[in-house]
Amino acid sequence: MSTANPYLKFASQSVAKPYFTFALMLFVGQILFGLIMGLQYVVGDFLFPLIPFNVARMVHTNLLIIWLLFGFMGAAYYLIPEESDRELYSPKLALVLFWVFAAASVLTIIGYLSLPYAGLAALTGNELLPTMGREFLEQPTITKMGIVVVALGFLFNIGMTVLKGRKTTVSMVMMTGLIGLAVFFLFSFYNPDNLARDKFYWWWVVHLWVEGVWELIMGAMLAFVLIKITGVDREVIEKWLYVIIAMALISGILGTGHHLFWIGAPGFWLWIGSIFSVMEPMPFFAMVLFAFTMVKRRRRQHPNRAATLWALGTTVTAFLGAGVWGFLHTLAPVNYYTHGTQLTAAHGHLAFYGAYAMIVMTLMSYAMPRLRGLGEAPDVRSQTIEVWGFWLMTVSMVVITLCLTAAGVMQIVLQRLPDDANALPFMATVDQLAVFFWARLAAGVVFLIGLICYLWSFMPRRAPQELGEVSPAS
Image 1 (cartoon, rainbow, N blue to C red):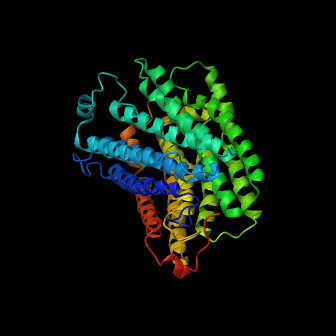
Image 2: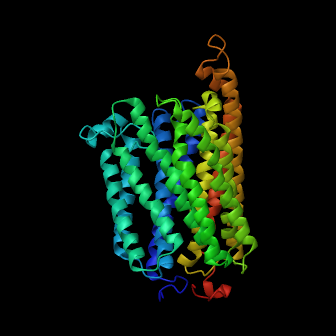
Image 3: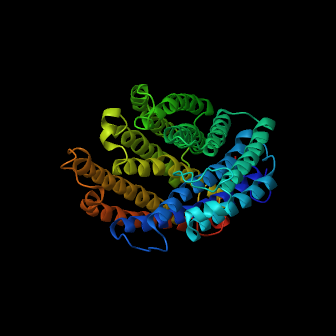
């Protein structure tokens, strides 16, 4: 047992705290650059030439990926010791990797903002191993190599912890997802000259992350939190987890085909992509049933009601964003008209928030009171503020999604459905969508307010002894 913090089962779990803290700092940066982009949609020269739209977008999406990775790593460092019933193999290695990854991330973002992208490529030796210039994978080659080093050290650390300790379904699913994350990232180094082949393997990173192995990570994190807050037998929760990950892998891997419809791949992908994409909402719907069933059958009323709300909310929002909004435009005959429109952005925003941002915030909501030495839950005022943050962020993200959906439908009507003679040009179409972009921007401001509430809920409050919370971790 930990002597420094009686609310942690193992002292080494404390290394999760800097990962969570830095993840939230990057999350704030992501939202700020999202607001900059939102304003640039309607005021085209805002901050030009200081921060052009393409740079703001690159920073926005890269911050999303980086903060989620920090969140996943922090989650692993927190839950793997408990699941393995032993201390982390090397807390020092975890802290060293944190500073390496944090420094590389900050320097990369500074490079995006301070140098022309071509200049950054030349400065970092991209010509020796060209990997730059692809959406979401814009990182310099040297940064990608650093990510691989950090990932190997991270997997070694948690892998040795699992090997030397107890093996549970939660820890094994988490490990499988994290190993898959690292393996599929290696395809970011393969950059063929043929554009169709390039996009084919590019989706092996992007799709097989977010619609494949990340779902395993999400499932493991959700199962861990539900075990802790409901007191339901582990065996029951593990059976649900097996079903969910099986559906996620079967539908997610072959569902990659819906990205291959129009890039020059063989025509059979129209069928494979459509059929298995229909199945992709199933694991997310199963997560909804899973979470609500476990909470209904709970054996204890956990004092952290905010964490319970996050656990339930992430399943519903993920099902809507990744499941429903993904299905809306994933069938080949529909995707012919919707591909690359604002409908894609609508799906992406709600899916990333619901499936991955919310699950990281769920685990943070559960773990941070313990990491801060407050016990099972923060005080009532902090939880109330956090609940406000949950609803402000979630409702505003739904509004953003609805605005982008309406913009996507109008974009299709004005630009995609008419024949060439009557179709509006792209920029003329965008002018017609301004009202939706203004509404999206306003919702984004509300989202930022919600995020501030979430952060504010972690501000220091009364000492634990003033709350009468003295029960140690179990």
